[in-house]
Length: 522
Image (cartoon, rainbow, N blue to C red; front, side):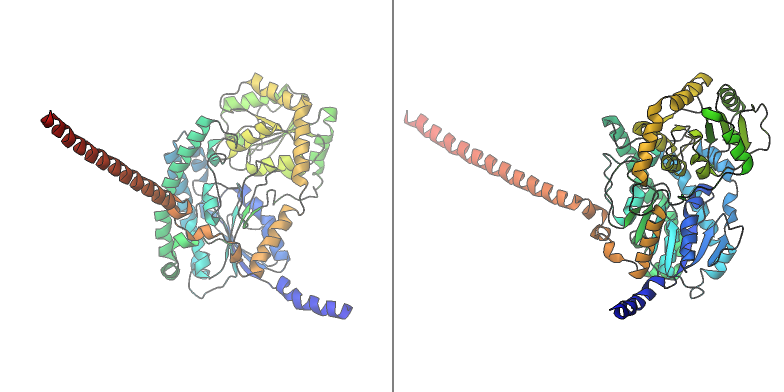
């Protein structure tokens, strides 16, 4: 019996350990986006797969089975672009801005020397799987047709109507807010009106402005593949979408089978000890504890207006807690003794520390997930994109509060910090959310790896693809059926009105003749 089991094991084993060649495309300049996927890509290499990664943050030390194709051109004018994003824009202007930003990034990949020499020429290389960040880089999907390989998308901010369309997922606008709107799933009537209009404008901009430019680039760099497969078919043929989200982090909603929630993909379950100097500063806080303050990787604290920096410094100086502040300069004039600055902190390890009482954050999704994972209340100071939504979710869930960094006063800032630290319900809610989030059958990373290899084992796993992907817009939303039924109803109504009119006319005509005959007789 044992011999038969061993024979069966050896027969099955090659299916699971067969090495795959994987092309990963994550060329974006935001560090947090790549931080989210690096553990996933490295785990794939540790399982024997060979990963070629197009990215803006190449590994400092060689990693076995991991090849970088650096795309450093994306940093050109990046800081100016981030500053421009802070300027007020209507929804159409905002989408045009995003389109141009990602169009330039997409073009920079195709003009990259290594990409042009090793990946684009037909027959030059081969890959079994394409993994791409599904973020306005539709022309990248051409690599799937170019190498005749299945494609997996990763969305580092969760999902929206655009991600949903890649796999035909249902996305009701009544409770699914636009990421940039700052709404939650519990919208008022006017918020639903605003969400409907803004999403419609975004959809029109995507299809009328964004897609034609991506189509042109796809045909330019994949001339042979574009003759075989149109881009409109490629961006509806994903094998899998991995979402950096989880219902315990936001709100429950419907997903098709090939949308998998892996929120917190990057978080290690074993926090590392803090560096000695940092640990001593944290331990020296006593019972008062520590506040951790970071605005993420895109917004620099050193670039805050002087009056805002001064307000923050005075507030921190008036607090009994010690503060760890991610500050991108070596010096911070006026820094009080209870503040420790550094250009970089091991954020997950800090948030795991029991002495940390509060996380003051820009509200990025990775930071929000890390705060929930470690059960820390948050004070959100959002700047752009999904940060407003994440902070509003934290407020709605009860583990955080938000302030407008542009208008908050020193008094508001201090009172809000004191509330979050001293009022027990915030920390208790954060711990409850942490327990719910951690209560999963597999870790997010293990889940992502299992489903990735599932796609490889089943040659694209297209059996998970919903039939809605083969339907046009009108058929998918049953607009053709509604039009048909409405037409039938109008036809029946028209016929009924005609019959009634004809009957009335004939009856009136007959009555008129009878009346004339009676008059003549009299």
